[in-house]
Length: 201
Image (cartoon, rainbow, N blue to C red; front, side, top):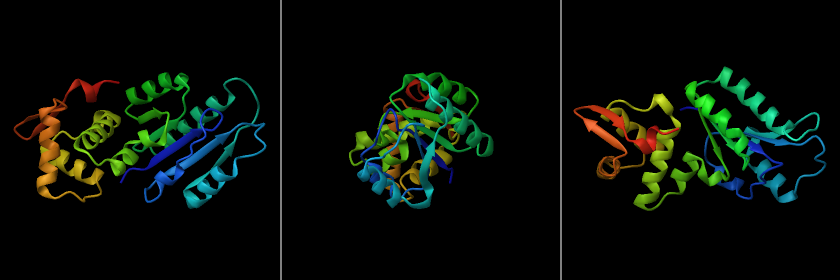
């Protein structure tokens, strides 16, 4: 299973739903400014409840983009060590988007989200309707870049793995058929290609 790294821009967003990450495999780093003296108790308590895979990184120095540069640096370090992982920047700052686009061109799976609920593995675990499940699968496939499944058997395995292998055969086939019907995937013999909603950057 690939690692998920979540990097939170705490100057920009202070998530109130960290509990959504419980039960998942991830590494979370909350980046706080050099002048940040306190953290709200509720946030600190929720972060502590996530255990050793979550922590803070206080930056050094000040400046309008100081925290952003720290996140970019740490993301680069992590990508150098674990290039096959998924990287999630939690920030409203669209200034991260060129970095994300560059990483994806380098075949590094990276996304920026404005809320934890947008992270594919969180979205999948909360999906109940067919539309929600398809949207979550599409987001996950999009984040994989060129490492998306190329064979039908691998696609089925990938979809089932997203749902922690809890799907029965009928449910799995329904989801794959729905991906095909909506034009997200094209199945040709045993090969898979992808529609524009997935391959767009």
